[in-house]
Image (cartoon, rainbow, N blue to C red):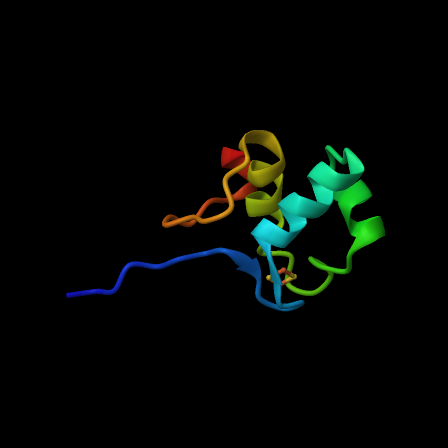
Amino acid sequence: MPRPILINRCVCSRVLFQDLKDDAEHHGIRSMQELQKVREFGVNCKLCHPYVRRMLKDGTTEFADVITDDEV
Ligand code: FES
């Protein structure tokens, strides 16, 4: 039986989406570009970008499905 996936961080920078959400709420940030000014993440493979955009949109910090830019 396959194990479910849990996507909850920028793997390259080892930053949890929850921590990014906390930063966004603390600083009143609504865009990924603004968020990258207060914490380093998302600069390598960029696979976390659609998840961070979704997090900024609806607050989700843990994902069980793969999402792409087209779905955000
Ligand atoms: S997972 Fe965020 S840059 Fe690679």
